[in-house]
Image (cartoon, rainbow over all chains, first blue to last red):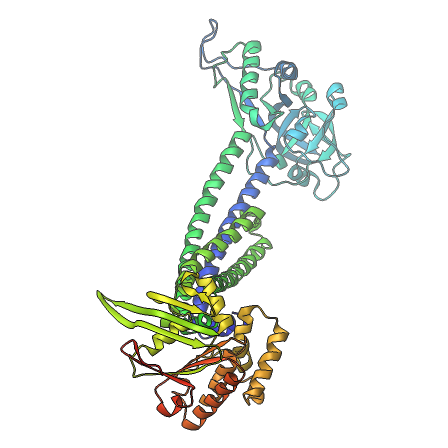
Length: 405
Length: 224
């Protein structure tokens, strides 16, 4: 049966065909929309999390809770910058680490003043915590650290508060009576998690400078990342052991060094989204199955209505197998039409939402290649299954009886 | 040369638990080029015999050989090929495809045989012209009179040049004038060497055949 004949035949069943196409299309629409929105949201959260620092862990020294070598619990864990700097030599597999001193203080630019989080960090901090500096500026470097230079990199909102739209690099600030040269401004970024404050409200100075200006000798955090993504937990254990040795706390004392592992968090998140997508996708697949039942029903009706025609075809020498193929082919064409309908509607929604401001909160919905492939496969499978039984009935018709219809 | 040979062919239908015999031990031999009328009251088994000869139905007992081939051992695909190449059917109710034009109906057996579009279009046009329907090629069946529809069906029956034409009461739904025209057309093909087996209960019509086979209660009662 040619395409023209199929279209002509389906026009006689306009209502039922339309309903069937809508049923299938709705299933495809549901799959694509649900999974694409899930994918978009997951990518947004991943992007935001990566802006805190892709795959980093942050360790905060706290107080001991276990007695250790004669010491009572409740002692503060005190870690110096030099101890942090010696860790790469002790912990194999530690790719990058930076100490971080944190304080909250006033920053003056002429007669303007803001209260901000001030972080004293090593140059490695920029890569660890995704501090991309706007062009024309730079982050803290090794020379700054070695010479304890009075230089500062501003979070973009700090810069806006102090300088408005004017350029900040090259300007001078006052911090605890010291003059600091602005060497860079953070490029704006999306961030959904933080400690102390968001990076736009934070300024960075060299850790060595921080020590000299504040007199503080003990770091508030250690930011680090394993070389290979999989073994961060192992690196964290070795790092805890090394610090336990040099600071005198029990290596079993989890509370003495509180660790926030964003890699483990990201893994958790990807499992959550996998589960969510499977659930949403699964319920959408059910919708598609219901659409498939509609297709099977339509094809049964078609076969019944065409019984005499099938009888004629058999009498003229059509093979039962070609009758089977014909009905299956019709079903697949129908399924493809329904699928195109649903995919078109889904793309309208997906692309439409992708250009609205909503994307800042829900991400840019996106149909990934595997999603598209699985959807096409599912549609084909449903079409074949829906066509198989009517096709079998058509091919098994007794020509003599079919001709008397 | 024997074209159709039936030896003790029977066909039973199972109706619930009852076995209903439609054909009981029919033996018949028809040579190539013969013009045979199958005559008998309704329920005599002549349609069943026609279906068996046309390979639309299989005998439950006995041997049927078409053109020297025993059809009992053939699978459904091979039977389909035989129906396509060796048999041409003309039905009482025309049985044209309502959505196809006249020429597409004629071309259908050629399409099923795998002939190319240009070839089947040309042959369909030639056949329709011979049937006097040159100006009706693109008409759909519902735009044609009964006689015209049956002429399309005759053209379709001979499209693949089958040796055997089976006509099942071909004039049953036609007025006498149109019916006579159809029979004359069929007889033209007999003259060209086709074997024609025609089921009828029109006595006058059957007299035109070279041989009359009478059936009653599933048996051949007279075959001169």
